[in-house]
Structure formats: structure tokens, C-alpha cells
Length: 211
View: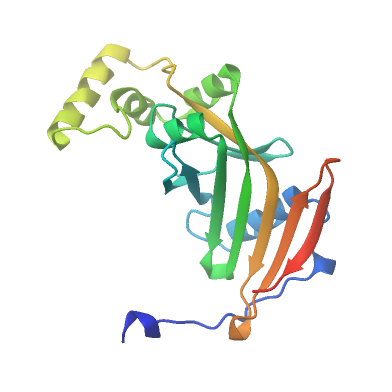
């Protein structure tokens, strides 16, 4: 079977303007909890798309670490490619794809760094190996081979002990959304799409989009 012949019809559920919450954050949390209840593998995984100073987009899979009225928060190396992209262009697009539920959520907005207090608290909650790895790895930069990377980890482990301090180049980002779209797969590719947009008064408006 060719790639072009790969297809699936969607028929698990529907989505209407009447059965979504007026607050898209509340609607996201509802869907996220349903994904967890359905044991969707890594339901907290999302694609994060950024645009560099050269205008080229790039995306990668990260794990969301907090969702609330402030926005969507994740943690990473500020000196990575995505960190440099966000420094030049502080906007991003997130995508959650819960294929088992035939659902997607697309989120767009402005991004800012989280506070040192938040960064320190989350860093100290991570497994020790992950903390050492964040110190040892110059994320997104070239390295000769795997052996060099593992030696850097060993040296960082010896240097930092069991209570490593958070490096200043590592921390969180929070995306404050102004567009959130909920997508529910439907038969014949007539998918349900409900878009929320934030207006100038800070209120959310919602409308249906054609698939």
C-alpha cells in the first residue's frame, strides 16, 4: 500500500459550540484529563513550533509541565535553538495530538520566561540524572560523539554531587495564548473545529471553522 493510500475515518466523538466550555483553558484541561483517563501515551507531549531570526520555522516535541490561567509552561535550555528563536521572536505555536481520541489542540501566543523562583522549584523536583544532564549538555550544539557526551555527564556528576544547582541558562517558558483551536475528527473528513480568539478586551470569542 502506498503512502497516499494510508487513511482512517474518524467517528469516535463530536464537538459543537454548545458543548464546549466558554473558557478555552477549562476546555483544554477537560480534554487533557480525558486523555489521561484514556491512558493516551504521553498525553503531556506537544509539538512546539518557533521561528528564528532568519524566518525559518522549526518544531520539536516537548512535555508540558503546567497549564493554568497564566498559560502553558515548559522547561528547557535557554541557549538551545528554540531558546534563540524565542529570544529573536517571542511567539510560538503548540500542538497536542491525541490520536487515540481523534483529537488535536492548537495553541498560539506570546512567550516569556518564567521566574527564577519557578525555575529553581521545578529544577529541584526533577530526577537527579535529569538535573545532571541539563548541566552537562550544551543543548543543540555539535559534539564529536556519544563518548564525549557521556564523559561530560560523568564530570558534571563528580563536580555537582547530589544537590546540583540550576544553571542560569536553564529554565521555563510560558506561552500566554491568544488563539486556541479544538479539533475533533469526524467521518468523511468533515471534522469539527472550534476556534477561540482573545479580543482586545481580554474576552474569548469562539466560532466554528470549516474543516
